[in-house]
Image (cartoon, rainbow, N blue to C red; front, side):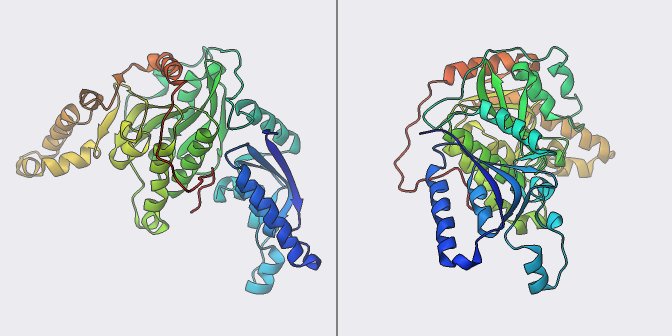
Length: 398
């Protein structure tokens, strides 16, 4: 019927007495989840225990909703863990709603009550199309709230954080933004808004958390969302302000290279309209990863405050001008002078614009108008790609 599916889950898992027959039942469901992936939106509500094999069907769907003190998701229950490992752990600590919304990332929406959860689902469904052959329903276009001023949201000092969600609310219709996975990997913000009455997906670095860097979890979060938008004809707008990928032994050992590559793949693979606005920092691999022109962005804009370079001015100046700094009588004064010189020569948006990598350097107050114009121009965009044997779904397998 090409309409969305909503699954309501309250299950203790496979019925042991049924043996392999119970397992076969699960397999039949997983197969259908997979075939329907990217064809119709699939939504799961966890309104009770969801144990053992039962958790894999929600994991294969596009959005999972959980409710505090009601939802429980786990592969192995507390009793089995106690028997095998001798550890006492509560069901809530093992796989409660907050755990999956904040720690594991298995849940996309978190609610305090069932009624709040149902309202969240209704709101989500209003933003997305019913199948991959349609576009999301258009609504009457509205201006953002007049109480928000985009010129005041992003601070002049590049070292001072701000909430990127305020930037989004300054440019979307009626300042209405539905955030997805708000509590998990909060250094990147994803969600839905409308521009000119049409649904768009937003991917934005969050300077308030880890300076907005990409790490393993935020890379997975962004990539999965981009692929959902691409599957269901939803344009993607990227707001960039980040110093790169998160460095450190923990991230390297956790596979940040493997996870980080998913963002590159998702943006490159997407054929929907892709538009990027660089707000402040865009350094190194992060500049490339956040929907750069080199990954196929249709429109690239940058604010005058944008800093686009291989690395930050301080670190770059210490390397490039090391000899001059070491030989100076006042090394700190020379260092600051060279940092300023580096910014003027390399780390400003006009250098990238002169090479054609940025379409236009714009004032913050022009952002909504130019995004609307870019969306209008790219609405009938078509891309032709080489045929591939593999059928990619909206699920990313680690």
